[in-house]
Length: 72
Image (cartoon, rainbow, N blue to C red; front, side):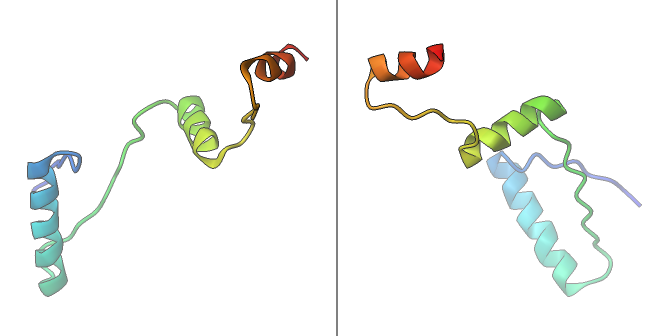
């Protein structure tokens, strides 16, 4: 058994991963197990997810209104 690490963010990595995925669908000789490590530590990953979901965001129509909301 051999383990190959693929960076799926690169062109070559994407191509190799798609080829391995096709092989794994047609035969049992190729098995794909993804062990994706988070890019950042847990608090940072949580903050990124919350920002993407819009949790805790402050909306304001102007800079003055924003500073008022932040000052409270």
